[in-house]
Image (cartoon, rainbow, N blue to C red; front, side, top):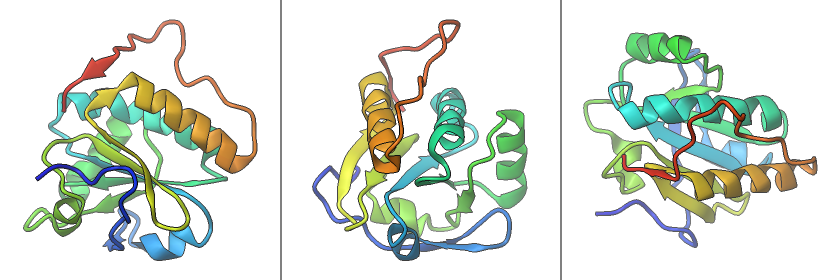
Length: 164
């Protein structure tokens, strides 16, 4: 099984948030595109990737929904996000069965999807792929009808690819 590809309809889901709320993909898509980023706290590539998603949240969070979907428990996820300075909404995929992760065909993390308001997956990315992150940055700016915000700083160690 491989992660769902671009051009595929994203499966609908509702998950509990770290803050106690419930996130519904269907409801979020009614307001605009959604970035769903799956991660596990013990994953080194997730640790590398999460700060960049936080930068995207800061740049475009008011214009598009960016949601991290954790494959860990609530306490561990909260500590992880705090350690890596991430404030994007975190959702909890039940570690007992990973229902949403399985519906999206995950075999590795991080895996993320850029989902258009019609629920079509526009970008599907497994691991760290710099070109995909740059494309996501452009699409988020377009979706928000704002200028592209630089995602990478000169001091960043930005690899072209890191497997998940």
